[in-house]
Length: 249
Image (cartoon, rainbow, N blue to C red; front, side, top):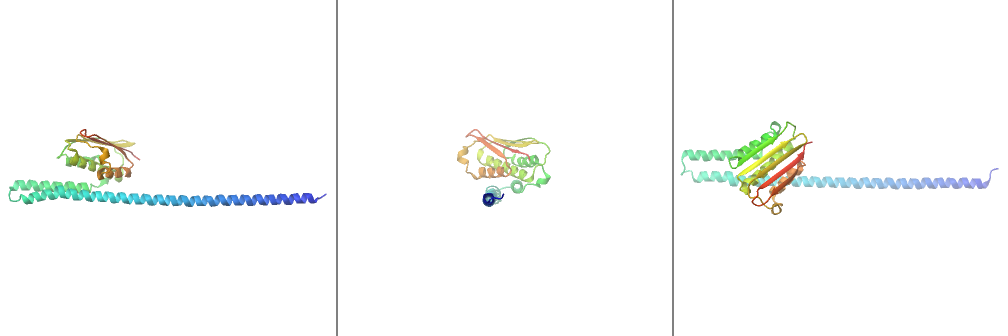
């Protein structure tokens, strides 16, 4: 026989079921809202990270451009303009043969300068040949020993260019500041990695005192671009050794 107590129990269970359903709905809604908020927050973080990366990239580009402009002005003033000015001043005191030699020397400086600013088509030249060509130009000013052990493996143009610029930066610093008589350059390219070593017998320096210099910042920036790690070992009067290593993708 049907009893009112049974009906009351059914009603109670129905309300309990409705309550549990509503509670579950509220919890799921809260979780979804929190998840959406988390996604929005992560998107904001990613967007901020992208903006920061773009800003850093622009700053690095501007820094490299400023450095190239400074080098351009310095090279023009210290080498080419000075050489031409000497020719002008000694125009009436030197014979034709001597003036001809001075003009050839000026033309050689201009060719070297042009090559340094714009290297050959990177698609058409191997990295070791690019470096060898540059070192051959500066070998008139210092003894250069270039050794390389390489295999034929595709190397991207950005890697070629940045490594080439690092070599230029280091050699330029050696010629200007190291008072070195010899520089050894070693390049090794294998299937998995690439190693570049540049060592001179110059006066060396204290790294801490030069850590904020434009040249070292330029090297650091270019190394970061190609994900290379590097180390500089130097002491006063004991020369300088630069070692860089990077994985080949």
